[in-house]
Picture 1 (cartoon, rainbow, N blue to C red):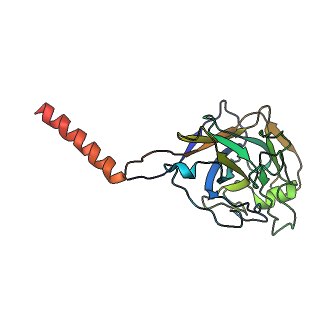
Picture 2: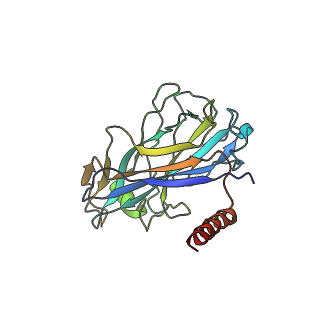
Picture 3: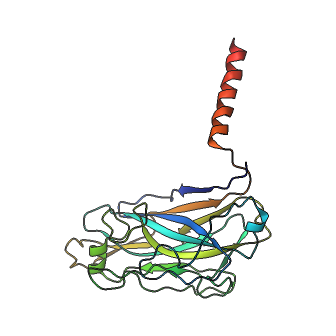
Length: 256
């Protein structure tokens, strides 16, 4: 049976730090041929209809589709009073079968990355500064996602267990982006969210009372995340179980 699958993987970052760390998580939201408005406020998906596609079908891999993704993060403080402040992240497609586009379907340098910009119900302030990609057509520079202030960071606890804004798995959204299929989208494609070159992670420290603006910056401690758009036949779970049992039966017959 023809099936499609979205596989989520984690890629460990090189090096260890004794400070807060972040796990980046890309999420495939669905696809559309329409031009949807960017999510606003605390929306977790764009306003409009998205379809989860069967990528074994060639018609679902052509350039008419805009594939929407959300980038989430989980922030793990190393010490009490640490709260997320700033990160630069980038999108990479190692296989090269997908093209980075904006929400209108263009490779223009604008509107490619759409930052997640909720307002704190406790502070009334924007949680992230607005961001836009400054890259040239067909390319993307890193997106900087920055917490607006120490007080808001302490209250909303982005990426932490007590975060005011959460995705279904408890992580915090950083932003959204779109990609479309190209001539090379004939095999499984990986979409990797990773730290941008030369970028760093920073966070507020000693922030338990919201009265500290001390910032610590580290050049590591960011773990990349990956999601795959799988092309081809995916065996049913029952088929996999039968195959495993069949192999076991062959081994037993040979031992007999």
